[in-house]
Image (cartoon, rainbow, N blue to C red; front, side):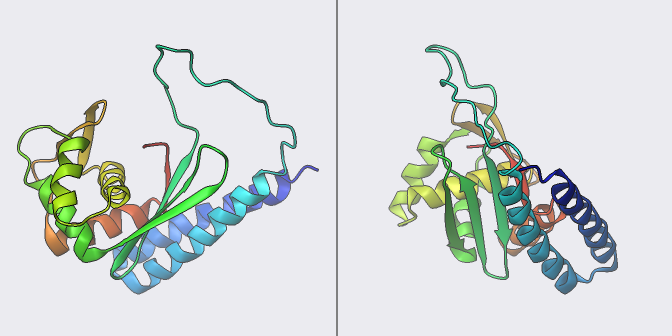
Length: 192
């Protein structure tokens, strides 16, 4: 069954939503931006579901050969930042999806540590520091992924990151992240 027409119309609707978000962002109408990004997330989920019907036969492919690096990750991340929570929905390796959530105060706690690092840091160091504060490992990875997608950190090696020197903190970081992720309509390709 081919659904290229409906999928194309969904893509056009998403493009229109992107334009509306830009207009409302310029006007400072953040309630409308939040509502439009909620619509965009629902639209993107529907688009993903419908696109599965376009290619009924999936090729079975082996993973990368031993000793070679994976060059890209076909899975996608979707971040949603609401008033006091952030969620990451991601396709799992087996084709299912999972969703991790955390509240703003825990996010700011983890992000505060990240922002305080003047030198490159590893996810191992971050996980160690956060486990002492009771933050689960999966939430730590949620923060790392969101900050990387928002351009607040940069991956410089395997599990090695550098924080942006002008990275905001506290509520300013939360507001910046909310704007950054909603402007991209929540869909962020790839990343671990």
